[in-house]
Length: 353
Ligand code: UD1
Image 1: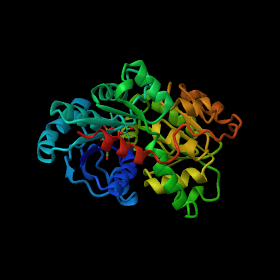
Image 2 (image 1 turned 30 degrees about the vertical axis):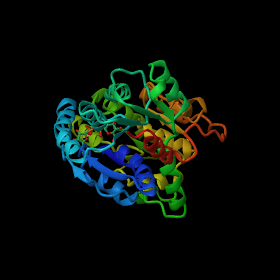
Image 3 (image 1 turned 90 degrees about the horizontal axis):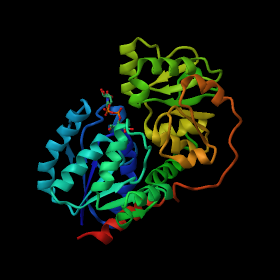
Image 4 (image 1 turned 120 degrees about the vertical axis):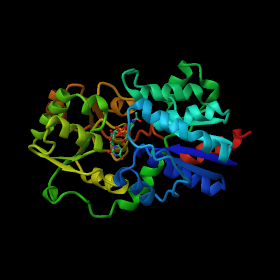
């Protein structure tokens, strides 16, 4: 059997890692297509290197652009790839523009489509990711859901027959990397050595592209008594530069995005996480570090219900939210047992042809 994975953005490389391993184990022929949505070494190559992912078989090198141009360039490149490889399945990951492009190209060519991380909803129709998810789930032949909540969303949209609960592959990769890095030194800037600090990331358009909001977030972070290690996504750096905002003001220490193993190590060394990333909300929970999420809603509602994630829609409230006592201990495992990737591949093998 031949499966063709379409990936292009940082979180997709993380999800691809355990899936690629599971395919190798059972001897599936695996073609990896990298759309080129993320192209900086720190946003792409380091993930392939550090997570032992085979080099992409095809690189579309589309780069940045408006949503339509970026998605369209990928779509234009995909036809020839699918004609050449004729896979039994196309597998798409998460909710980025690369996901949507892989989806449209597969269904137009009548190639069976599986969606990993199906059924997530923010119910915020201003998010580009929300449209990417909904459209992909409705086009897919197989919706591979990470959680019970995701299964309920799929059921509510009439997709139960095509849906399967497999668990979250990000748990697989996190558990294996955690075991590897626990005894390694922490790679944080010298000024944080020996100090308490929180890890922060910001990249969502609703936070980075609105000058007033970005200024308010940076101002709140800069006044916190515990220093913040801000791992700056290229989008954040570019917008801050455009708006003349100094990201490194006050108690904020700015650094480049970390390779995945070093990110896990840094979270373990931190007292908590501040983010707008979906992946990081879960990683914080799985590593049992409290998370504060600068958004109005989250797809990972379990983290909030269990008390380990606090949504802070208004950046002015960050200081107060971070001053609250730590959450109660829990052994809840809403994101599975770390063996989801094997179920993903088994489900596709079972349904092939
Ligand atoms: C994308 C995904 C988002 C995911 C995120 C992870 C969509 C709609 N959004 O957002 O769901 O959580 O990736 O990071 O697909 N840039 C670089 N170098 C790079 C990549 C991007 O400089 O390697 C810059 C580009 O100039 C671009 C900006 O970052 O303007 C945004 O990149 P883009 O791929 O459009 O979306 P992300 O914000 O990364």
